Image (cartoon, helix red, strand yellow):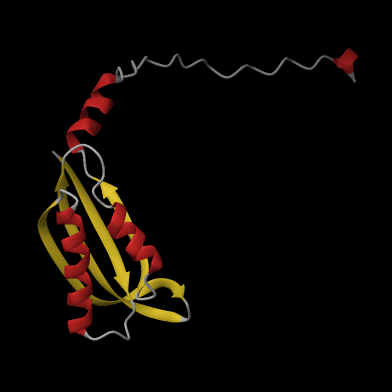
Length: 130
């Protein structure tokens, strides 16, 4: 089973109840498509890194989702794109095991001792060169 994190930022002008309702709608869409909501985190209102539609704050919501092969977010993503209430969203696949395997597949580079050479001595200046 694959694990995902789905974060979305909601318009700060919505009430807390409206944000909860919107989150529950997305959760229902995900579970209808075969996903399992492992955990929901509501981070509340936070300052945005940059203004979006002249807004400087947003309600942050993070969903931890588990699903079989394939992403169960088709309808939820489509709804987030169409919704004026959602400012931004991001889905990240959390496969720590796969990342560790990929990292361990690469051989460690061998560290060789560097040979330090003495700096070259300047050639003696003869009287004929002047």
